[in-house]
Image 1 (tube, helix red, strand yellow):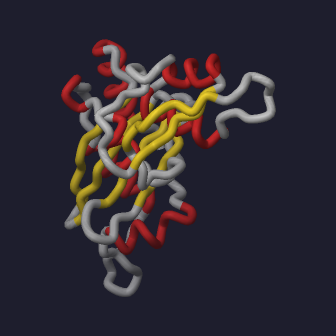
Image 2 (spheres, rainbow, N blue to C red):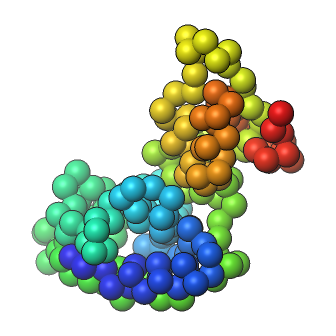
Amino acid sequence: MKMDSLQNLHSSMILEKLDMQQFRIKIGIAEFDCLFSTREAPFIFSMTSRGLHSKFFKFEVKKGYWISDSLGDMYYDLAKVLKKDGSSGNKLYPKEFMKEINELIPHNAKKSAKPSAEDIIKIRPDLEESEKPYFDTWIYWKKDGKQSPTAENQHKTKVAYGQEALDYSILMNASTKWSRTPTGRSWSTEKK
């Protein structure tokens, strides 16, 4: 399904020089923390349900702002979060669900809606060591090629901090080290 709202939001993000937006949407009784990220290719739209047993849902945004309306493996978890099932007559219809999301996504970007790296990692449990959302330090590897940052570590670095941090990781052959507790550090202040 074409997500016109994401296209409008992205246009607004470009004007504001933003590459990430965080917002909440409510569908029925379920509330979701949402992220729209243009730091990845393809772009990513993700939703994490709020509550004790939160569930994470990730959608790739294809060229032209298309998201598949086939929910695949997400269907049953999403139906459970939305309290929908086939026997109650209140069934989850993927196309209708995607249309509803499209109507709820904001069209205007806000600088205040740019999430911190910690917020991004907390909302994106698909990232490496998502239980460690706080930057600790850089681990510098020898440039002999025997050791280097993992692809997962570099992906987390890029999603959390952007392309500039990833470029530094590649240039310096350095991995980001993360902590469970706040450190007060930032990747840019801890550079060599």
